Image 1 (cartoon, one colour):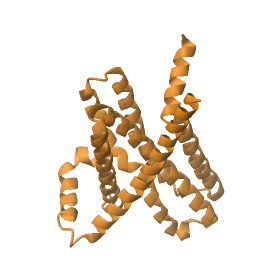
Image 2: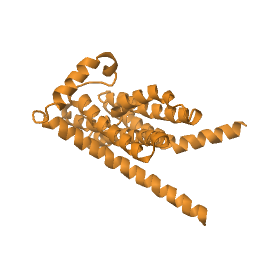
Image 3: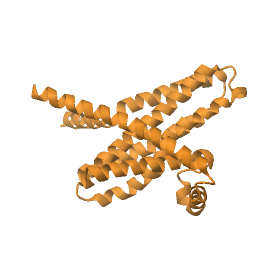
Image 4: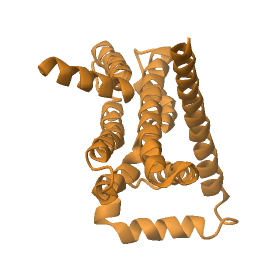
Length: 238
């Protein structure tokens, strides 16, 4: 009985890419810890916090999949974790913008540029990986409830919202939880930038570019997943 439960848990973890995500996170944290020892400072410790925030939407997506499996006809179970997932989703790919911190030349010594670049890229890759994995899980759930077309519309909408969220975080210094505690201020800032596209072209260009970047990442992941499914089907027919 225990072995069957462990086998199901293992399959669930494999299905949701938990093992490579943990490995990628461990690598990023190990590189950061090496920098702390090398420089005797925690200059880039915010990367660890950002990585923690990136795990929140992934955890919500796993919870949603589990609830969907237990209550396949009761979609309202998914509303609360779904809202949290959407609000925190931008935190995952947001780490890509931390590459801007490479400008801190004065705080880098004695650590060379290539080490800091490798460290931030490892965190950024893990964040994008977490975002894509959680979005794929949500895509599958929405498709199961509402069909293929609405599944893709949901995914495209989430990617657009993700671009907006990253813009709000990087340029306006808003956090996901500010939508709970200061919603009026966040919405006011959002409307001020996006209601007047000619006056704020940077907001639109950045949001569109980041959403397009994430779309390419997601399509790459989805195509690989589809290819694996086709391979399994072909092997099963042999």
